[in-house]
Image 1 (cartoon, rainbow, N blue to C red):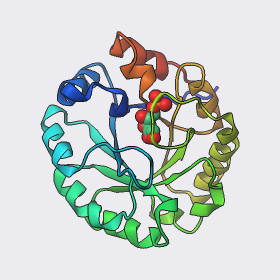
Image 2 (tube, rainbow, N blue to C red):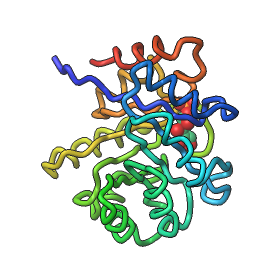
Image 3 (cartoon, helix red, strand yellow):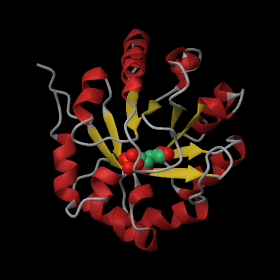
Image 4 (cartoon, rainbow, N blue to C red):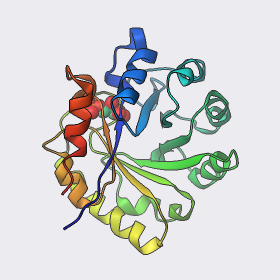
Length: 221
Ligand SMILES: O=C(CO)[C@@H](O)[C@H](O)COP(=O)(O)O
C-alpha cells in the first residue's frame, strides 16, 4: 500500500484579503504545511493580486514555508524583490518566456527553492531541459488566474508523466497540483504522483479550516 501523506498548501487567493495576515495565521494554527501565495499581474493572467510589499507584511504572521507562484511576465525583475520580502520558494511558468533556465539559476542564486509551473495546455516534456534545476514542479489543474474552477481531469496523464520524469531524474522534487483540488480530486492526483496539494476553495471556503486540511491530508491512497 502506498502510504504517502501529501503536504497541504492553502492558497490564500480564496482567503479574505481584508485580513490576509489572520487568514494565514489561522491555517498555520490548523496544520497547513506550506502557505501558497499567488502573484498575478493582469497580463500573464487576467487577474491581479499583490506584490512584494504585501508579502513582506505577511511574513510576520507565519514561519511556514512561503510557496510563491508567479503568474507574471516578465519573471526576472521580480525575483529579488520577492526573495527579500521572504519567499522560501518561487515557481514561475515555463510559458512566461524563453529563459527559464536562467530564471531558475537566478532564483537559486539567492539560496531559496525554485520551481517551474505548467499550464493545462503545456505538455510535460516542455520542462525536460530544466528538470535538473528545479525543486518543485507545479502542474496547473485549471487555467491559472482564478480560484473556484473545475478540476481538469485531462491533467492526470501529465502528472503521471512528470512523476515518471522525476523518478528517472533520481532527484528529490516536489510535484504540486493546483486548481479544483478537494476531497474528491485529491485521491486522483495523489495516485498519479502528486505530493503537494494546493487548495483554495476547499480550505478557505469551508467553515472549519482545520477539518478541511485534515480531510485533504487524509485522502492518501
Ligand atoms: O493559482 C491558482 C489559480 O490560478 C490557485 O492557487 C487557486 O487559488 C486555486 O483555487 P481553488 O481551485 O483551489 O479554489
